[in-house]
Image (cartoon, rainbow, N blue to C red):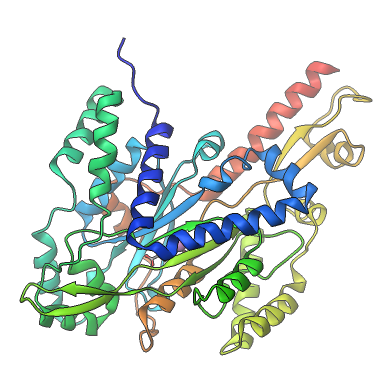
Length: 453
Ligand code: OOG
Ligand code: NI
């Protein structure tokens, strides 16, 4: 029988190769990793509870390799080929993000592993945005951009051949997996030379800098890789100390006893020199660095509370320093319960249940008795970590890299159906995944209990 390399192993190798490539291309990214390692070590040294939690959930071992990255593509065929390429690594499209509302002419999904055990083997995710040329009002410019995009192929022929081969065989051999990783990597490499002349670049850049970023190069260069920290406020302070120039505010919810969703900060994109096709020397800013801290995944009820509080805080935080911003945010989020018991009892967040002790267990337990079982110390409930992204935060990250004057929202409707059509498949709903993890844990807990009694 032929042996095929596991998709998680291909993902692991690919994530590592990408991280090495980015580190050599953007040395500041290497500094961020060192900084995050330091913060995580310091945080874990003083926090037995967190240590235990991360060990229990299987996240401790993934922490120092955990990264997400982001790319932006221009056409439906690029997006659908990416979907096939990522599926070789066990990464699937989860969640739909409409950023046009925030003045960014893209919509996005995140390719990521979907099972808990796969996430723990290697949680590599790529936030992937598709340019919405339909939002360019100038018809000529739109046609020009679309014409330029139609001429490029962002994949090597060997990468495409191996994607086909994976589909036909149902896997890749060791030799094929090696070639696949290095060929797939080529798509994400930085190019110092633009495919267009300087005037074309300027015209597209004037419309929106993001359009120039997507259209003027040979491929969708990886624009950041993000390590996961356990204390983003400290990481932000260290970024200042190390003169890494962080963006002014940390995006997402405020600091809390029970962290929810996702908090993010970043340093601004570097201005890098570019040679245009007419031999003009210029520059382009695309690549930056980002840090994230992950908290518990919220149910639709919890999420809508988050969204409404965030909206409420927005009116009050405009123009504030990070310190003041966080203070106002904390005040507004006073209305979001900050202990696990209430989050659970009010159905605001997702938890995973397991048997803690089978002493004193009585017969015929069911889900309805869960709170009693927890109270008696027989069952433990562990928060399920949020593995996805936040559109408002993503827009904030985009904006901080785009320069000023590009913040008007587009008059457009969310366009999930057209994104799925371009993708060539449906997008997986993140809530279905969290819900399934929670449900499976309850089913198997009840089975164990009823076997033991
Ligand atoms: C993606 C920005 C969003 C995140 O973590 O939310 C993002 C981009 O700039 O292409 O990375
Ligand atoms: Ni990011």
